[in-house]
Image (cartoon, rainbow, N blue to C red; front, side, top):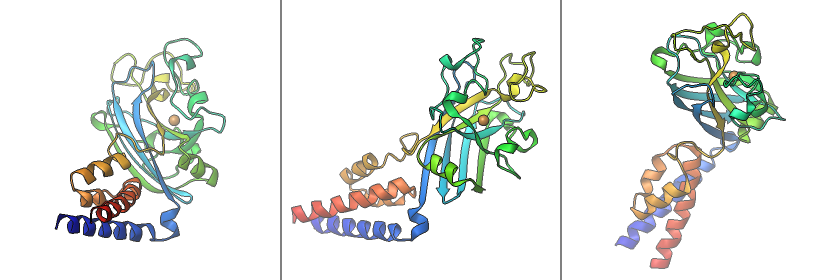
Length: 259
Ligand SMILES: [Cu+2]
């Protein structure tokens, strides 16, 4: 009886996974990457976040959540990429002027140029990199952002899909006065203080999922042990689905060897 149950679960799982995988070329071209956002070295932000980017051809959907930011002030946020960059977040040794903070330019060798501006409305090209009135103002220090159908070039889509791009949220408050202030001018726009544009949180968008929530094989394997194959199916992420397909085949094999 138990063997039969296992076999049916395994077979239906495999069938469902096969169906999901045969949805069509659009599904096949769909990739997603994610990042854990962490405080930029030297810039004193006590915050964190996550970002996910779904790439479908030349369009991306970005979902981002962050906390610990200076509340009620605009936070420019971008996807950065540079072919010559290290495809990662900057470290203290990138502090070229030795002032103990990393400005946006100093982070360039790590994350490259702006390739997508994560504005709430309107243009999302690099031209809107400092369109301060169209970025989140982080009420309560938090950003909850989602925007779909963002058009990118083929080169940018490819770089994001390859796990080579980096999400950066800008805007810090070194002197803790609750606003962008100070004598140091922004390296990007001298009319602004550097606090307004220095990177606050950063995370490299990798192909491997962030946070260990969807760690594919491991999760599916755990579900198998506890007989919870169907739970694995309920996770909608592409990676989880692929893992489910693998575990289904495994379950079917296991059932046969038991019979
Ligand atoms: Cu940026």
